[in-house]
Image (cartoon, rainbow, N blue to C red; front, side):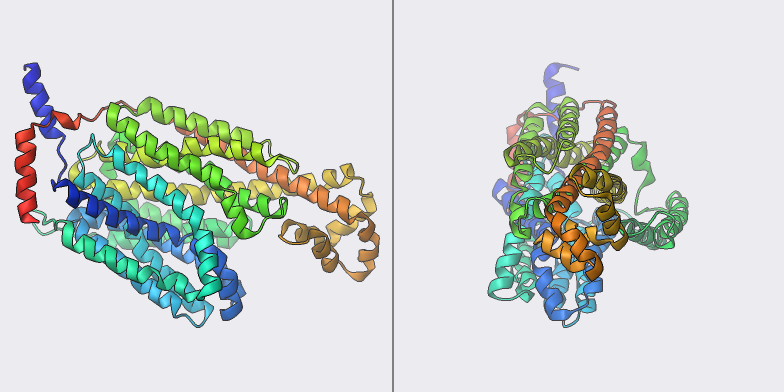
Length: 555
C-alpha cells in the first residue's frame, strides 16, 4: 500500500461520527458545556446556602443528605444514561436529563420541609447524571479523534470553575434574593440549553432491530450501588463492622455479583462487560478510580484546615482552594491541546500522575504553622497533575472503543471516578480519625498541658469543640462541665494550639493514602499502547466540504 493510499485511508478514519458545520458544532458544544456547568455547580453552590436553609426548614439531622441524595442518584444513573444514549441517541437522553434536572430544581426551591428538599435534590441528581457522561459522548460524536483533545480539556476547566465560584454564588444569592433562587436560577438557563440541544444536535436513529433495554440489569445495578454508596458514606461516622457500614456494603456486593451474572447474558447490558477486555478502557477506569482517592481527600480536608486552623470563613476557604483549581484548569486545557497536536498520551498521563503523587507528598508536610504561600505552591503542583487526569483519560477511552459504545464507556469512566472518590473518602476518613486520636495526647503534653488536665479533657470529650470553626477557646469552655472549666481555663491557649497541631498532622496523614493509590495508577498507565489519533488535516478537503455542505443543508 503506498504512502498516499495509507494517508487517505487514515484520513477517512479520522472523521467524526456526526459531521456538522463548525459554527453548529460550537453552538452544541457551548450548550452542553453550560449543562455540565449547571450540574457541577449544584454540587458546590448549595454548601454556603445550606446553613440558611436549615435555619428556615429545620431538619438538622438531614443536613448531609442534602449532598448525599444528589451525589447518590447522579452517580448511579450515569452509566444507565450512557448506555441509553448509545441505544437511542444523545439528544433525547440529554434533553430528558436536563428536563429532570430542572424539575428537581423547581421542587427544591419550593420545598417547605427538609425532607422535601432532600427528595428534590435526589431528583436533581437523577437529571444531572445524564449531563456529564452524555456531554462527553456528544464531543466524541461531533469531533474527530484527533480534534477531541482540544475540547475534552474544557470539562476539567468547567468543574474547576464551578468549584471556584459556587460558594460565592450560593452566598450572594442567599443573602440578596433568598436561598430558593439558588435552585430557581437553573430553570431559565436549563431552558436555553434544552432549546439549543433540541435545535442543533442531530437526532440519531439506530439501524436494525429495535433496541432492547436491560431493565433487570438496571434494577440490579441500582440495588447494588445504593447500599454500597450509603455504607461508604456512613463510614465517616461509624466503624466498618457497623451494620450501617459493613452490612450495607456486603449486601451491595452480593447484589453486584448477581448484576455481573445477568450482564454477562444480556443482549444490551447496561455495563457491557466486554469493555473490560479492552486494555485502554480497563487501565483508564482503574487509574481514575485510584487517582480520585487523593484528589477528594485534598478537596474535603484542606478547607477544614483553612477554617479550623487558619480561621477562614467557609466562603474564604473556598477561594483559598484557587491554587489547586487553577492548576487543574490550566493543565486540563493544555493537556488536551498537547494530545490533539501530538496524538501521544502515555508519557503525558504518567508524568501527570507522578506530579499528583509529588504534590500529595508535599501536602503530607502540612503543619499548623505552614506558611500559606508554601501551601498554595503545593496545591498548585497537585492541581497541575490532576488536570490531565480529568481530560486525557476520556480521550483514551473514546478513541479506543467502537462508536456504538462511546456513551457506555464515557459514563463508566465518570462513574468509576466518582466511586473512587467515595471509597477514598471512607478510607481517608478512617485514617484521619485514628491519627487524630493518636496525636492529641502527645500534642497536649508537648504544649505543656498537665496530664491531669489532658485526662479531664479526654473524659469530657470536649476536644471535639476545637475541631470546629469560630472561637475555639470559647467553644471549648462552653462545652465543659462547670467542675472542669476552672481546671482547664488557664491552659486554653496551649490546648487550642495542641489540638490544631494534632489536627494538621491528621489531615496531612490522609494524603498518604493518595500517594500510594496514585503511584499504582501511574504504574498502570505504563500498560498503555500509544495509539495516536490521525491528524485532521489528512482528511481530503473536497470530501470534508461536501460532508459539511450535506449536514448544513440537513440542519
